[in-house]
Image (cartoon, rainbow, N blue to C red; front, side):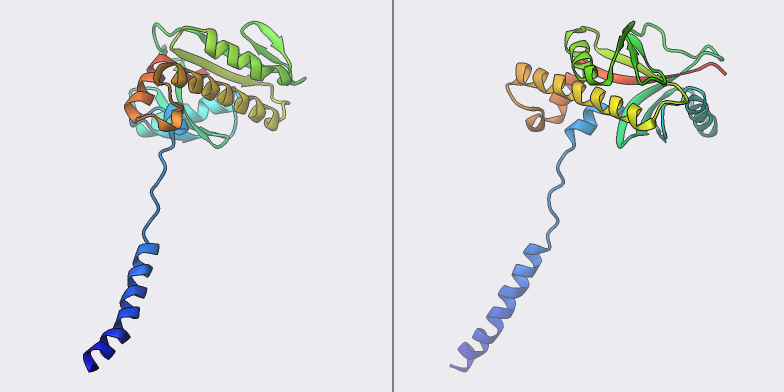
Length: 209
């Protein structure tokens, strides 16, 4: 009887400790498939950028490569809350990629108009313009350089950039359904990489000085 009494006293404590241990287990980290599709996953450096200022930003990137003494010009740009694969095209030292396809400049003027693929658009039109370009173009790597006027509101540029990212991810979602009959969030990493090999976007920053 005494043993049963002692057991009944310690049993609630044991159960309580067990519950405490279980509730303190860390939650499983969800794989960020969107980040995987956007960034360069080859172990390159990341450079934090404030905007796409065509005079200051390439100089900042060049300085970073000089500090690290790197022979290549691939990197990840941390900008507007995203990490996206990027390249520095150094025209001054003739260090530019060879055989690149579908390189496009997107220019935002001081009237907030967008020149893209040789046509002028308003901000409201860019969702459809980006989507049609990504979905219809067969080139696997969409190289885009974003340039804006010094008087352009940075929030306008951020909005255009977000529209570009959203259009690309929408296109990739449809590609995932067509190829694997599953949404992106259900794909394994090797499947995501195969989709990325078929279609990806890369920012490029031309440096002339």
